[in-house]
Amino acid sequence: MTWSEMQPLLSQACWDTLYMVGWSTLIAVAGGLPLGILLVLTDRGGLLQNVLANKVLGQIVNIARSMPFIILMVALMTFTRWVTGTTIGREAAIVPLAIGAIPFFARLVETAVREVDGGLVEAVQAMGGNTWTIVRKVLVPESLPSLISSTTTTVVALIGYTAMAGTVGAGGLGDIAIRYGYQRFETQLMWITVAILAVVISLIQFAGDLAARSLHRRGGRSGPAPRLRLLKAKEPAPDEVSRAA
Image (cartoon, rainbow, N blue to C red):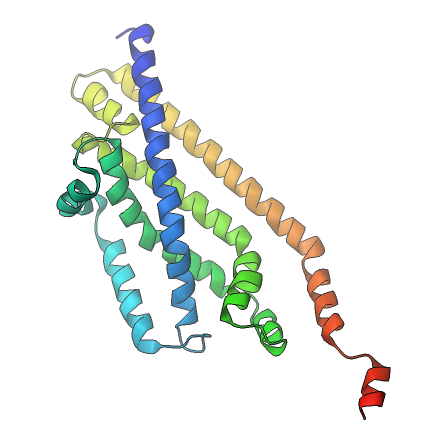
């Protein structure tokens, strides 16, 4: 197969892969972020402590994470057909990709949120902040660098999932590698596909690491000072204390 024949195939495959990964990542973040935060809030000592709910959610997440993706695709075929009207193509592949990524991302979010300094949470509570305020002003902003890294990890995992989705006609680079590289013995095309995947993953990992480091350095230079000023602003002045006495 000549380069002129391979180019349109690779261009469409790259677009299909990015399309599936992009939409799956958005859905995974939208579903996994609140789920991961909820796992932290309902745990022992959490702001919404509920041991039973935490165990149920944890078991659901563990079961979903333990299922191999190729089996998940087959198990969700009926649901996928109900949602998209088909079980073949990139739109159909987004359903199992997103559902498989949600529990994976939720566990990463849980780990990231648990790293937040408990003293900040107590400070906001002392100032009268409710649970929503703590989540919005403390848990998410303070864990943002780790959340960016978690999102990067999820994107890289989804790219690998799309290769498996190619076995059921989802399209993308994995489909090209299997149909042309393996089944038609187009070794050159298969290695080009592998190289493209390696470059894409490297670029995504580099961008994610760069964003996470940038946020971490910004938080390290300016993070504690605004919080300290905020706490001091809430403290009564000495003359106010003497007048109140």
